[in-house]
Length: 223
Image 1 (spheres, rainbow, N blue to C red):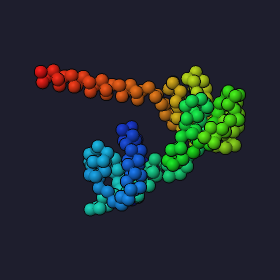
Image 2 (cartoon, helix red, strand yellow):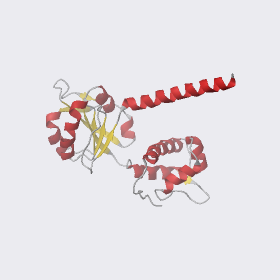
Image 3 (cartoon, helix red, strand yellow):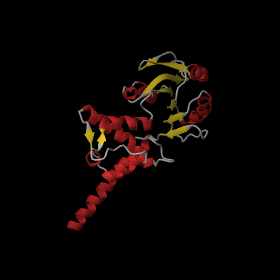
Image 4 (cartoon, rainbow, N blue to C red):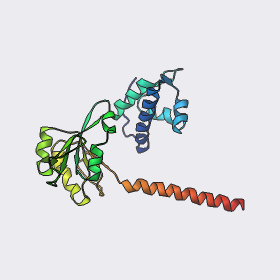
């Protein structure tokens, strides 16, 4: 079995991989040993050909006539997502979002450990949230050089977020998960994921509106 990485995995495929991992984790927890692509497709609302296409992009995981071994497939996808080892996170910004993320218990179970918080508010420095201590942003580079992290989570106001990228990269950060309301940029060797919380709400309201319009059209046709 090989876990090769495609030259460029599509964004749609990358959105499905964590969903596969969650589904397989649940199936393993309730005792599933083997699983066909058809059964996995049924549970996830996909087609079995889509699942086989996704898995074949990484070398394939099936066994002829026996489908997939659930535990082995989950571990293999975990290897692809690189979550079978711990990733240390630093959160920059100990406001509402930063504190909520630091106290979210689900990170550790998925291979992510929040090890440090930073903020520029003297009233927050020294406090702990979710067992994680807040340090001053002014000491951020020195602290991260002493205790490196893989990923930085930015939850600051938009007007200060971009200025944080350079010192974080200088401290060895290779991935930035950005919740500030601005698209951040950085060096090519650093991966930045810009999260816009309201985008998901807009997608939800669009689907709600779309459904309403389709129902109205259907009612007009029936009349």
